[in-house]
Picture (tube, rainbow, N blue to C red):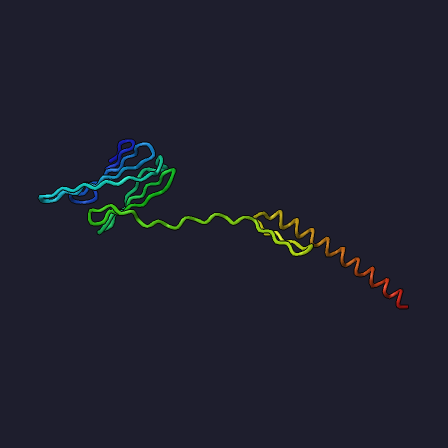
Length: 147
């Protein structure tokens, strides 16, 4: 059942999970009732506004709640009447900054942009052509000087 920023999930006999959003905080309340007992457990997470409605997947032994918020996505497991934060996937690594190496008059740039690589490739081809022409010129001079 849902009403705006309030969702109620019936997890089985005597177990009800209520999920509410107040400001940036998502509040969970798990109420468990049984013969002669009543328990309540609460937990809060800073998720920001929800991008989608909270979603619960059920299995025989536990339920998994996923909250996709603007600040973070939280997965919570309900096991044996307890709220447990599910292990999250590792955060993606940030991209590496472009790398530049220089040895004498030679330099190498490794970056994310294909245009940089194409420009460097063209520059190296032109340098190679210039060196070949100079090599041919020097050979001709040497041959003339030798004869």
